[in-house]
Image (cartoon, helix red, strand yellow):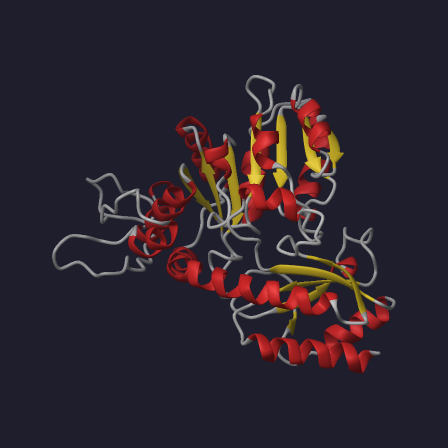
Length: 372
């Protein structure tokens, strides 16, 4: 692999790192659809020894996050491997607004392993600091999904913790372009690489990045034993997605800020949430450590669930679909998702893409106006 100086910017690293450097080799790491190799080298079986694209993906992500990366078949595979490090009776702290799949994992652990879990709003910094003193796993999301609450990550991460505990940050929504929790002292970060890393709604993958090589080794073993290894094509696509992630995130964030401002002034919306808005409750804290505010905007409509559904169905450019982080904009009424029924019925989450902002606003405004 090409040796890129660690001092380059994250944008340059994402483009330049993880490429072949030998004379006559392809500029891009090739897709190698092989499960096994001729014996006699360090690579024998893909489940254990990876493929070239898989290795390159881990090298690029590890470098941009500042740790050792371990790729998985999905974001949930990452979460499962991290929680699998916990023992019977472990104590866990989760955000009140937390990815439903992670909540499901912990609920299963409570039944099968006797885990106990405390749920806290990420904005309650003092409560997190206090709880960190005796928790085995501190699991943070910031911004949270879908309410976009902001945790004071530097303060919480710096707090005194139980020896041997793990502090993990789900960095999917922020991306390493906007914040790097490992540099703040987190033990690990995780990503659903399906989202911004892949960026094109065409793969499922996940990745953990550990500050301690021993934790990375433990996660690799968990991946091997659980069968959570990523596919060859998925890693090739994810690596290709990394090359344009900086451009995509930059364009999407600019659109998100513009849409948030316009939605704030629309008569059929209220409670617009976006950390980049000066009026947002998380803006002040986010501004102290985030380099950008992400590309997800959440708002509520002046109407019931049926009105919100009509808005989603009548859009032409913004797609009515789940997930986030791709070049195309998507919208979803989150209270309709199993496990998210506690959310306001008229709350809509937009993953803002890279389309022309005027086209996006024309589409959204027309839908809001017609639905009313």
